[in-house]
Image 1 (cartoon, helix red, strand yellow):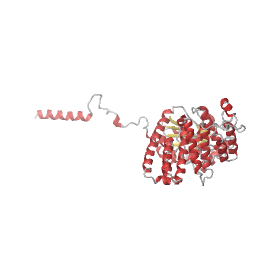
Image 2 (cartoon, rainbow, N blue to C red):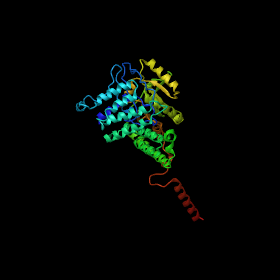
Image 3 (cartoon, helix red, strand yellow):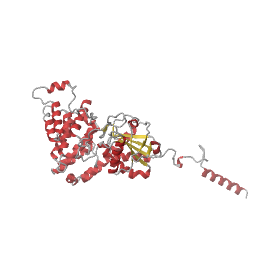
Image 4 (tube, helix red, strand yellow):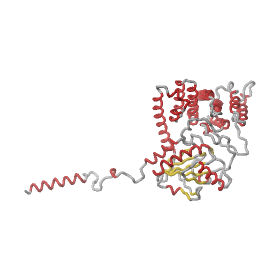
Length: 451
């Protein structure tokens, strides 16, 4: 299984960042959601700057979470199967058999030229001799998704259908893949796009079935179902309103379980920082005590990090008066601190960010257990205790649910007075009002007897 998941990195190299993916990535704890690996650090604590990919400005596709750490600038990125699989190599050498290794290498050459369909064609040559290779089928599904949206103004819906077909074949070839949250997320998007294609062919009933598969695998953007132009025919079905109602309930329950898991899996750890923000002002963890603090460790170079910025802006706007404060801590790919600050300032201004950001050194992230990818976001309660840590892109709904849960918690020592016993009431004794009434009745009887 580990070898199969390693192959998923091939799809990332071949496909780059996804483009016409309507569904946002699934919510993620440390194993899920698109994330960028931690870049290598230089001796001065900054991170080495690398040449950005052409697709960096595009939305990350669902499969990006399975990507391998990027190679050094002076090292060639490999996109071939594991050379250690000697048995597979011998099998591929049989006369007339298409080598998977050769197919992937050839496909990569086409991708380097920007020819997605050419890369897809090369990989498809290996299918007849490898019909049950889940890795090959998953990569083909990813390439079909990319090919469908090469021209965003004119999606090629047939490729969406092919992507779904390849995905189902991959899951059939290796049923354990369905247990991987990254796979489920990508499948949800794949089936959603298939539903769009089927609806465009005037097959709304089939499209609705595909949407149900998408929801079952992890798709969660119900609002998109109700506004996507391609799904207009599906919305005309009499059973669509009930489908939406059930889908909302399913997603809500799934998200609740997800939040429960995040809180349960986050073990407390010490974290502190002292830095100078991009405006030249001092900022420290100690300043945030008494507030619900969100510390987002990110970089302007990181696609999933940039995807989340609008969510944090919205949270800061909505919950600032309730005592929520967000701070962005940046590890930039810059040659020195001055360049790092400039990069952050430009991004901060361009995106109208409403919370403070500050460049940091690797020593700060060394405090975070198992820190391995960007973004990494930590949530602290009013006492300064870390309560949740998530890695990778997360939709607004998940971020807001974590914040809401922390806001609902009562500060320690702030217990309702009704929970405490009145000072006059001893254990086993009667309430003060009852004692006063008994005393009054007794006095009345004595007064009557004296008359």
